[in-house]
Image (tube, rainbow, N blue to C red):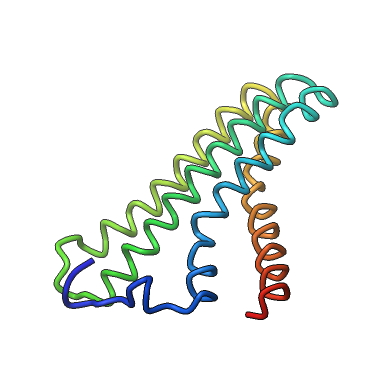
Length: 147
């Protein structure tokens, strides 16, 4: 954070703003919890290759989500603060390389085992479930606390 782009300090935020600002930290935790809860049933119902594919997909999704959140924050900081040292095209290249990595891993799994590939695709979708859990949690807290 640079002095040219001041942000509101956590103490100047309302409790509701503080709660909603923590969503970026809660979503990866939901993602890991979903993955941990589903890995054993997937292995039991479908076998080890789909469970391994699911684990790889979920781990890659967790990693990808964290990098995406950092990239969006860096891009926002870059837009707000024109004098940052990091160039905009470097941020964009990171976005592209991240998805290229996902595609390469998916291709390698696809060539190795169709069952593992199906599990991988399911694992890659875990951020959607995590964001839905976050939305439900936010709705519950908003109704409970009156945000």
